[in-house]
Length: 78
Picture: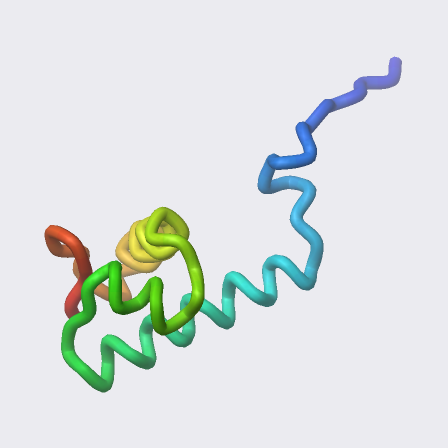
């Protein structure tokens, strides 16, 4: 029996190694910035990293899950 799984092109299962590397680098830059400044808001991170605000929000959510920062209304703190 052969089982085929279909994952749309936008799914996280189809991310290339380069995409994963970019995500990891962006999250490292977010942590470095917040470590230096103690806090950051989504808008300033978005401008600094040339990423959309929703991308920064998603990154902050993932970083909070790993207990690396605490999200606040509109940003994050260490």
